[in-house]
Length: 301
Image (cartoon, rainbow, N blue to C red):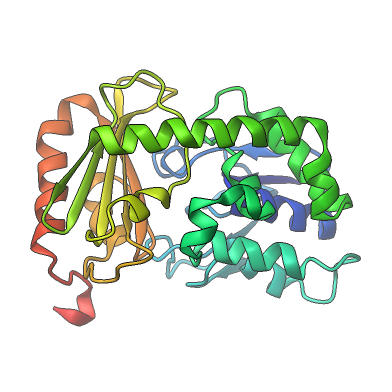
């Protein structure tokens, strides 16, 4: 039996919980949603798929994304929820030897972007927020660190996790990178009415900073589009779109919109990846949809 999940904070917590309650004998398989959707991820019978799109080969599936829920029969749970970790925690209620209430609570807050401005602007004061920033799913050499976090969070309270030498060093690097990221956001973000557009394609290997920081820097906008080259495949363009967590007003279901471009996600946040040759067609279309700001959900049309 094997856990298959994505390398973000929610995915880490999913792996912690599943490792506690299932007989996991193989290393965690870390992958990305687009690889599952396009059949490039190796999903097999016995796999527990978490925080990723459904794959018919898996034996158990847990997810919480708007665009991933399916009418196909499967074992597990898919429901709209703040985090996939929360879905798993409720499914296995009463079977855990440790109390993971606090860990799942923060997975909910971080993945659903239910943070305060203070938590976004000073993440170093909030251990879980800072820890989540050290997990870079685009790091091709990040797997040993992701596995380390799963082991630490299974055994130790958050204070001890943050005192781990490797984690502490990652945190120091994340705080420094976040300051660089702040400067890049100010330099490479264009505001078009209520939409902020951060195009990092001119930047070689841009750092991963706090994904909510842009909403503090451009408070009059209601949605952000971030564009960059995929760190693993420079022939792909990666686009992330997110509603402002401080200035509600975007009426577009982002996850649903991005299915048109090979991606998906939640109502308020999502991502897609596509070949560079499609960028001049796809990106203006995404921006035009957000500028129009018309509801796109079936029950609102």
